[in-house]
Amino acid sequence: MTGTKGITLPTEEDGGPAARALILVLGGARSGKSDFAQRLAARLGGDRVLFVATAEAADREMARRIAAHRRARPVAWRTVEAPRAAGEALRGHLGDCRAVVVDCLTLLVSNVLLAAAGVPREPEAPGRGNGAGAAITEEVAAAAEAAVREEVEALVAASREAGVPVIVVSNEVGWGLVPSTPLARLYRDLLGRANQVVAAHAGTVYLLVAGIPLVVKGSPVA
View: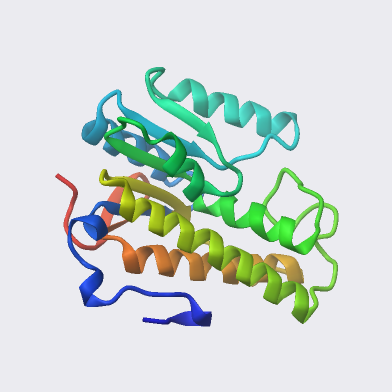
């Protein structure tokens, strides 16, 4: 089935264990979504967890954040850095892992958008830094949309093939003010659509509010 902006959505025939094994964890900044995803992964996979990290250390502050996240994860977990091509990283490093965390779709979409738009990588999400206020042509927007669609569909496909629970973490960014720059507005739209696609394919979707996980699709993961 083809959904918003030509992105493929699942049909009823796409259900079954592969679909149920994809779990989306949404939330705002500091909502507790990453902590919850890690606790869930530890329960499902123990020490045999693959952590796909999408952040890039663009400056010292981001490097400190990445280092702090690494320290918070169990040392036995396998970590792979994948600012882009997260689906390929999942396939290539799964091995004998029993669960996967992809943290996060938010930065993955940001990285793909900035690369497609030819904007230098900045430590913040699109909307600040060099090029944030530049005009976005229809051609650039279309190229970015196609690149994000390809990235998200590849991640969904890899998740369905993994044979183990795959937990994707993402931000819900559409509840605030309308962004003030064209690039930031495009980013908000692309991430919102990406979240919809992953949620449509997921068996369970959680929304974290003040550290509390709310099930908005499916049943709580046992």
